[in-house]
Structures are given as structure tokens and as C-alpha cells.
Image 1: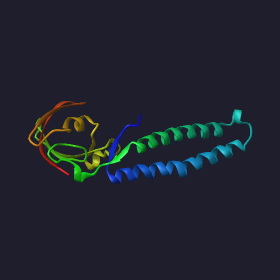
Image 2: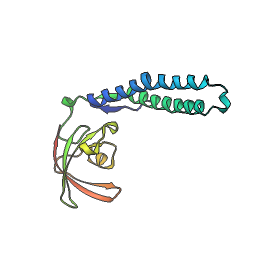
Image 3: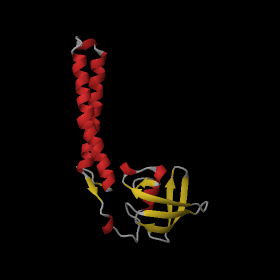
Image 4: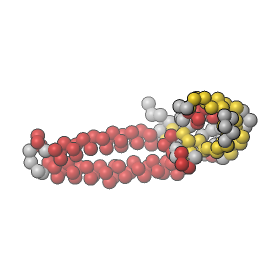
Length: 157
């Protein structure tokens, strides 16, 4: 069963580009390496051949995983999203009630998460804890460092 994942248009293009690179650049390179190693003689004692076959297996697993992700990918139409509550692609301004720090995160699909750009996965502890909440709500989220209470200050797209 294919798992449905939601992406921005940019995120889906990035996924497709990576998949195409693996299939049309990396796969032929590995095949050539196997062919070159095979031409060197006895395969039973050929470390290059063994390494190339192992690399091929790992590449094929990665391609299969990305193909499955791509087949279940759906582009999110932001105009159809409700901005009254936290959803994927919501930009959420929250206050950590433990230390009064104010943080703004954008909730994105797992593959688009980038903490340096304040994009967190909807599958992360904070992302999961914020989903479905409304402005003014206080949510208590369990993170590796313990329990943190957040107050939702603003939700935007």
C-alpha cells in the first residue's frame, strides 16, 4: 500500500529530480562499473565486481524507495487550506511558555524539513503537537528534552 505524502510544488520537483538523477545517471554508471569489473576476469576473486554489485543493490533500493514516495506524492493547493488551524504548510508563530522564547516554524512534509530554514516536519514531535491547534491554544508537547508548553500566537500561509 502506497503511503500518501503531501508536498509543495518545489518539494515534488526536487524529489523527481533526485529520482531521475539516480535512474538516468547513477544507474548507468554502476552498470558500467560492473561491466568493467567483469572484463577483468575471474569474478570469484574480483573485489571491484563485488563492490559494484553491492553499490547496485543499494542504488536499486534507494530508487525503489523514491519511486514509492513519488507515486504517493500529492501537491498541496495552499488556497484550499484553512488558516484557522495548524495544517501542513502553516507558518506558525509560537511562544515557548517555559522560557518565553518566540519561534516561527513552517510545517512541511518530512522530506522538505530543513531546521535551518525553520521548516519542521509534520511528523516531528513539535509538528505533531501543533497540528489541528488554533490561535490562542496552549499545547504541551513531549520532546527529547522533556515536556514543553507552547502557546500559538499566529497562523498564516
